[in-house]
Length: 261
Ligand code: CAA
Picture 1 (cartoon, rainbow, N blue to C red):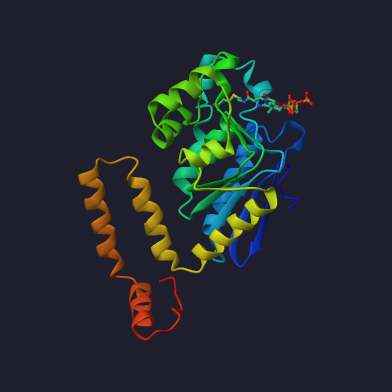
Picture 2 (cartoon, rainbow, N blue to C red; picture 1 turned 90 degrees about the vertical axis):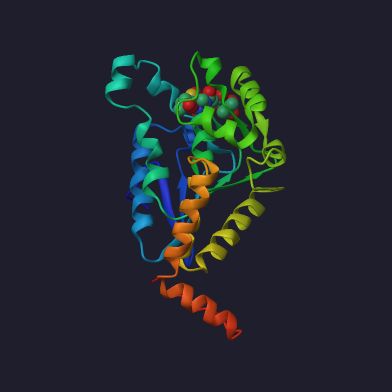
């Protein structure tokens, strides 16, 4: 929309919200004003009654080429520290309770790779160009790359990629399990992301939010605590209308009409 300078927000299908990074001249480099807009848009989609699932994407050429290097160049330690530089990027993971699908085509480098990894499901084209090239700039990943990439693909591979700054392809992202699915073309990628978002949007919003919450907990908790947390949330869903509606519909061989209550 025209409210935003660096992103576009749309609802491509009922129940599906989409944020498209739109700073083509800088390959969607993630400057602070862009991140502020992204947070605002995602906050509104999260609060919207008409949206159940969200797609985050860039252009065919670039998901995002990283944090804005020109913005960072003059930054000092004290400035970065006292303004908690980059911290607000993580609002995406704390503020948004609805599932976010990253649809990655082209460059997803540095902060772009990290932003994609913050999402709940990562889809990409086979030709996508991922990497953590910060070492080439005399610095290190700053938006979770060293943690999320390592959890996703293992220590040795992540260490090699982060220490060399070497890019990796969408095909490799798929083989290593960083991407849930890969697609031959950009069009197929966007179609696949939309289909999955629509599938999720067809379910109870209460159950969908609970799924996201418990899976994410697995990244933070030891197994025994995680399983216990899951069971507590599972128990709590017996307090929802949608659990009754879903199981009754199954017994009666009907389609469930969710109330999202
Ligand atoms: N920040 C600021 N501007 C960027 C940028 C970035 N991360 N990436 C690209 N741009 C700009 C370029 O400066 C260029 O602008 P001008 O036309 O004004 O010169 C424009 O986008 C187009 O880029 P290129 O001409 O370089 O395009 P290319 O097709 O030749 O190369 C590329 C594409 C390989 C992605 C190359 O642009 C590149 O290497 N970009 C930087 C990638 C990078 O190092 N990212 C990590 C950033 S650090 C980080 O993200 C920290 C963190 O962990 C949070």
